[in-house]
Image (cartoon, rainbow, N blue to C red; front, side, top):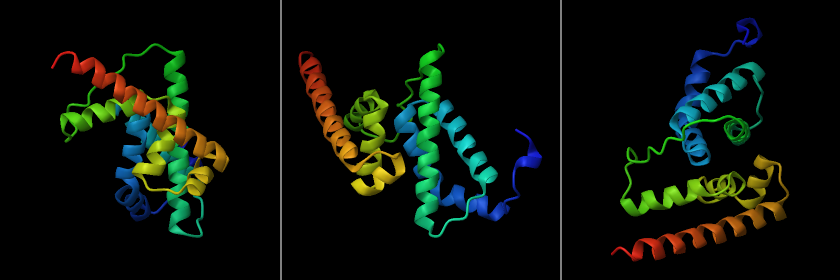
Length: 170
C-alpha cells in the first residue's frame, strides 16, 4: 500500500472512529469470522479503506453504515480466502466473559453459514431494522427477512440437536 495514496486524515478523526465504532466493528467481524487474528486483519483493512477513500458523510449514521458494510464485505473476502487456502481454525472462545450457556450459543451462531449469521448479528445484536440491514448488505428487504427466518430456524435446529446430544450425558 503506497503511503502517498492515502489521503491525510486528522489523527483525532481516526481515533474518534476507533473509539466510537471499534467495539461494534470488532464484534461484527468476530461473529462472522470467529478468529481473532482474522478479525484484526479485517479491521486494519477497514480503517485503511476509510483513510484511503476519505468519504464525506451527511450524517453520523451513514459513516456507521459505511464502516459496517466495509467490515462485512472484508469478512466475506476473508472467508472466501480461507475457504480456498488451508488454515488452522482457532476455537478460542474461552477468553470471552460469558457463561457456558452463552458460550454454547456463541459457538452455534458462529457455526451458521456467513450469509445468515451476518444478517442475524446486524438485526438482533446491533439493532438495525430490516430496511437498514438491506441497505448495509445490498440485499432486498425480502431477502433479509428470508435470511433472518432461515437463520433463526437453523439456529433453533442446531440448539435442539446440541441439547439432545449433551442431554444423553447428564
